[in-house]
Length: 232
Image (cartoon, rainbow, N blue to C red; front, side, top):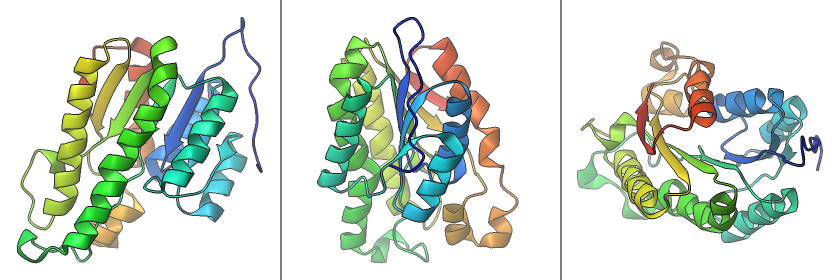
């Protein structure tokens, strides 16, 4: 794949990560930081052009596609296996759902079902495929969530429901997998294309740069605190 790079092992050990939603925003900023620290990376996102540009910047293996697609998830699992297994899985890819953000009274159920596929079932499927190696390598899972999972914001019911499900999934996973660190991270509002689609470009421009969240994630990876919910 264009931009793919394999970092030599140090003392026989490599550090391998899969980051979803890595073509821009928080996923890209984290990929750049991990690449600078010598990690082997597999990155994915739906936009192939942006993803390949991200691969050129990070030396990652880029595999464009939708995490809701089983064939795409299999391709990611194969790539992770070729690296020798994952030490870190970051479920950052996320859909917003129906826009303009509708109230639950008229939320289109087909759109909501698709959103659960992207924001909940896709991450869980990737976790399931990665778990054997994460257990052996005492790896970690970071699931990016939102305050919409725990607060009641008008119009955010569909998105918030998926993030609430992802949080509960993460909480139970942490209880079931004591050898794997599991953190579900609420990064706060970030200046992203998705936020602009939800609230408009002007309001989104006032949010934090996604790069400001990266030190929080790097600290989790480096210090390995107990599994749990993390807010920036």
